[in-house]
Amino acid sequence: MKRRAAITGIGFITSIGNDRKEVSLSLRELRSGIVPVQFLGNPNLPVKVAGTVKGFEVESPRWRDWRFPERYAGLARETLRSLAPHGLYALCAAEQAIEDAGITRADLVDGATGLYCASAGSAFLLHHHLAHMHAVRGERGNPMGVVASIAGTVNFNLAAHFGIRGAVGGFAAACASSSHALGFALDEIRLGRQERMLVVGAEEVNAETVLPFAGMRALSVNPDARSASRPFDHGRDGFVAAGGAVCLVLESREAADRRGAKVYAEVIGWGQAADGHNVAISHPEGAGLAQAMRRALADAGLGPSAVDYVSAHATSTPAGDRSEAIALGAVFSAAGARPRVSSTKGITGHPLSLSGVMEAAFCALCLDEGFIPGNANLRVQDPACEGLDLPRESLAARPTVALNNSSGFGGSNVCHVLHAGRT
Amino acid sequence: MEKSPSLPEPSSSNTVRKEPLCDFPEEVREAFRRLRETGDPAAADTVVLAIVAEHMPRKGVPISDQSALVADLGFDSFAITEMIFFVEELFEVSISNAEILGVSSVADLREFVRAKLASREPRPE
Image (tube, rainbow over all chains, first blue to last red):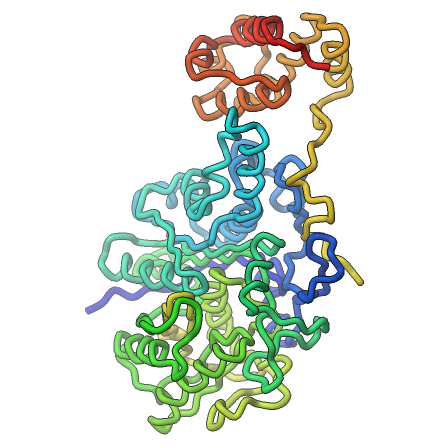
C-alpha cells in the first residue's frame, strides 16, 4: 500500500496576497493582483500589465537596497547576500509554510526532510553580473553571482539557510517545473525516502524575465489590467506575466497524524506525459495533457467522475487554452463527467514555473475551506470549451477531489490529484 | 499610468554605479574621500576596518589589528571572497587567489590594501 502524503503547511508570496488569509479572500472574491506597469521606463512597449508582488521593493541588484515586510526583517546578511529577488520571495514563503506546519528547525535538519524547488533562475541578476564581467574585461566578479543567479539558486539558498540534509534538487521544465517538484516530492514520501518535503516555486516579475515572452508574441497586449488575463475567453490574446513564490510542506500522513498536524489536503496521485510536438506550442488536441490527467487519475485509483474540480493551467493564450479545453473534453466529457473547471490566472497572471505549486496550494485551500474559484474575465466562452463547466464566479462548494494541471515548454504536461483528506 | 514599485526604474540599476560606500557611515565615506584626494594611508585603514566590520559574520565582536578573520570574526572562505570582491570594486584593483591566501588577520588585510594602493599606477583620481 502506498504511503499517504499530506499538505500540512502553506506559504504564499503572490500577486494576489502575501499570506494564506489574503490569498483565500482573493480567490473567493476574484480580487485581481494584476496592475498597470511600465517596463524599462518605455511607454511604447505594448505590454502594460503584470501580476506584481506587493510589499517588496527588489528592483535593485544590490540586496542592501531591498525593502520587504517587517515580518522578515530578521534575515541575516549572510542569507540575503546570495539571494536573487525571487529567492527572497521563496525564503519568505518557506518561512511562512514552516511556521504554518508547526515543524521545528530541528525537524528540518534531521535528514528526513527534503527540498525540491523550481525557478528559471534570475535573468535580471545574471544580466547584471555578466554586464559587470564585460565592463571589467573579466578581471573580477561578485562571488555571489553564480549562486544568486543561475537556475537552482532557490534550492541552493534555501537548503543552506534551513540546513536541509535530505533530498535537495531543482526542476527546470518552464511552466511545469514546480509541478514536477511536487510530483517527485510525493514519490520521495511514498517510497519512504523522506518524511517530509518542502516544495517551492518562485519567479521574478521584471523586464528580464517577462519581456522575452513578448518576443515570442505570447503576452497579452491588452492594456486593461481588469481584463487582460482572460483564460478560456474568446477574446483572449496572450498571458499576463506574474511573480512570487509559494512553499508547500508535504508530509507523510503518519508523521502528520503523529504530531496532530492540521491537514489541508492529501496529494494522492500524479502523472506526466509530454506532447512530443513542438518546443513552445501545445499539442493542438492536448494529447500530452490528456494523457497526464489519465495517468494521474490511474495513480490515484480514481475515474474521471470522482473529480469535483479541475484547476486548469490555462494561461490565456489562444493556442494553449484551446488545447487544454480539448484535453479536458477528451478526459471528462467523453466519460460523462463534468467537474467544475477554472483557471485562477485570470486574477493572478501567469507566474511561469511557480504556477504548478501555487495552484496546487490553491486547490488545497479549496478542499480545506470549501470553495471553488471562478474564471475571472470569462465573458464569451471559446467554442472549444463546449461541454465544460466553467463557473464565472467563485462558488461555495465543498470539493473532495481536485485535479491540478500544468504545461510547459517542450510539451511537458503534469497533473496532480488532491483529496480533501478528511478521512 | 500607475507604476508598480516592484519593477525596475527607467535607469536600470544594472547600469548605474552607486556612490562608493553609500551604505557606510559618513566618517567612513569622508575617509575614503580623503584617501582619494591625498593618498593618506591612515584613511585607507579606516575604510578597511569599516569593510571588515560590515562583512564579518560574527557580529558584536570587537575588532582589533590582531583579530583573525576566521577564528575571531567568523569568516569562512566564501565570506572572505565576498569581502575581497568589495575591496576590489571599491579600489578598482584585482586580487589574486595567492594574495588572498596571505591575508588571515585584520592587520594582514590593512597592510595588504596599503601595499596594493601604493603599487598601483595610476592612483585613483
